[in-house]
Length: 218
Image (cartoon, rainbow, N blue to C red; front, side, top):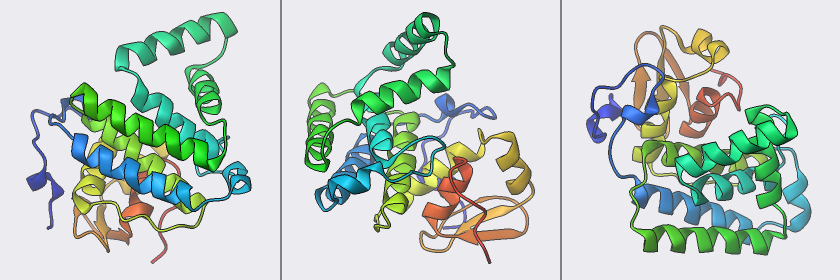
């Protein structure tokens, strides 16, 4: 698979705009949540306080971000963040981190149960999962797995879709690294971009695109 887009229901996709990637990714989001819940099932409570790949986040905060982000609609999240920014005079990033810290409280077992409850609520709601939900589930899942040094068998279609979405909206430093390069997932049979190959595992490349990991070494 040289072009992951053949798996994706794409419309006219604007640069940096993930909302234009259409489709329902519910099954892949659910699968990612199940993988993360399994990691938490085998984790000890002290490991949750290890630093995560996201700057200023611990593992538990990353789990909390996942729970908070996927429990609310986009409008509800925006309203909550805006209200906190005004009341606390903080940045959007700080507001999101505060919500993540709150949602990440508890033992490993309690956080596992939160993810299970989240999966059940999403399944019963019947709400379609946009690509942004998948990005959150896969990126946070890779972050948690790497921080705890655990494997995570994310579906190649899911990791490729996230890589494609993130490649259009990466930060300026990341864009400088990937410009004119083809990101080649050595373990997932997908590639994104054009130019000389930059190879790495799907996990390494997705975390790079999300600004949570280094450039994979050759």
